[in-house]
Length: 145
Image 1: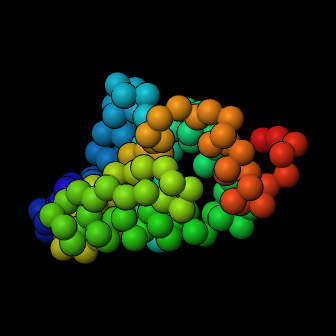
Image 2 (image 1 turned 180 degrees about the vertical axis):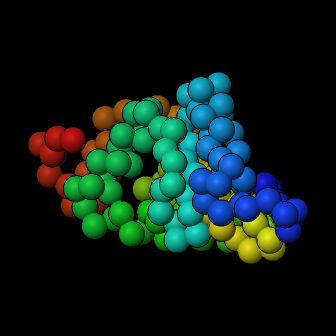
């Protein structure tokens, strides 16, 4: 859990405090693992996105082409609160069945955001998984990014 107490340093978003450190960690994590990693703000919105993998592209496509964007933000935020609650880490499956893991960003005792790793799929993205995503999310099979 990245946590800063009242140290006399301005820790607001983008001020050189916790969020800047979280962005650096997210970049390093993604570069070394090739797994997506985002930094979210306290609303669940994406502050920084270090994701360019196939699974991230599927998430982006589904969020853009369906009404799932708010559901994704709410799920990320729920994960952040659970990570804070359970001592700094939380692993969960989103509504698409993809795995994510979260570490909260706590500033002056209050949750201000989180680092979210994923999405990851246990197994390969085969044609059956993609067909199931299409069927379960009311997506036309010819939909392009």
